[in-house]
Structures are given as structure tokens and as C-alpha cells.
Length: 120
Length: 114
Image (tube, rainbow over all chains, first blue to last red; front, side, top):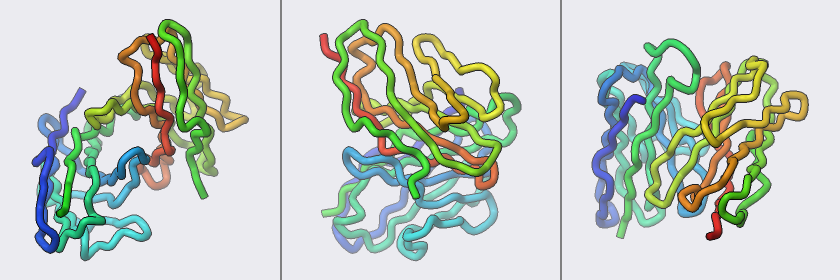
């Protein structure tokens, strides 16, 4: 299957700083990428959908000024957590959609390995 | 309103036994897809199986099968001959055609006992 990478895999930062997380599709062009957040022992909550070259669509309750998403190319989307606070500590997972893949629907979306953010 | 419901927060199963993980869903979109993912302690999301709303037959992938009961809006995952490595969190998920995003249930933590 296709590969999605995330960098960094783990980050610890001080409260008030901004953190950028990268999500890359390594062997396909991802016109759509999704960002999820997962608290310990909880489910994945969709934060936003980003389409290459346009503004991200945020889910209800997600602060767009807090979580900046940029999808500047077909292989890269970034999530920037601005002025991070301890409550932003979480596991962030990206997912990339390959609209170029034909065939079964399940083959169209792939998940990255996740980024664990800890804000002190 | 919750669109994906997983009623079993945790399950303990003896190794080599079959296990069924429950999932019900709610949608008015006639076109949708149902997914099951496994998440081990490492955190990666591992795709297991997919069922399209128009698929006539239940999906199967090796030891995994999806018991799709469309009228009941049920999409249970069946794991045959469970193994110790099956211990993980399992998520049922759905993607509706109209908004094209995957939404997850709360998950079931499966423990396989030796």
C-alpha cells in the first residue's frame, strides 16, 4: 500500500511555543489530507480537511487560528499548533487521500504513523 | 449525534477463539463505506477491511471478515482463530460519499489471553 510519513514522530515543547508537524505522501499525490487528534485511550477526532491549494475546512469546535493547516503541494501538508499549551498535548495523525487510485474505495486513504506532542 | 457506535469498550478472549467486535452506524447517505482499523500500542492505524454499502457480499481479508447487515446498520468485525498479536485497539469507521471524510467510533480494546 501507499506510504504516508509524519515528522517529527515525537516532540516536547514549552508552553507558548509553536510546533509544526509535517505530513508527506511518499509515493502518490494526495489532493486531500486529513488531520486527526487522539487523546489517550480515546478515539480519533477529525480536526480538519485540507485540499491542495485551498483553505482547510475545520470541524466544528476546532480553532482554525490555533491549528494552522497548509497544504501547499500534492505531497505535503503541515499542521502548526500555535502558542501551544499543555491541553494541546495529544497524538496527531494525518491521513492522505489518493484520488488517482482506481478500484476499491479503501485503497484511497492512508494514515501516517502519528506525532506525539507533549507541551510542558 | 454519534454516527458510529461501538458498545464494547473492552473484551478479553482466549487465544485461538473467534471474536466478534460490534459496530453499528447511522447515515442517511445511500452511498457509504465502512472500515475497520487496528491500532496497536505503537499508535499506527492499520487498515483491516472495507465494506461498501452496495457490496452484495460480506468482505473478507484473511482471518478478518465483516458481518454486514445493512437493514440493521450493523458492521461487526469477526476475527477467526485469534492470536496474541491481535491484542490492540480496534476502530470501526465510516465514510459517507457526500462529505468524503472518515469518522471513527470510540473503539474496542481487545485483549487476547494465552
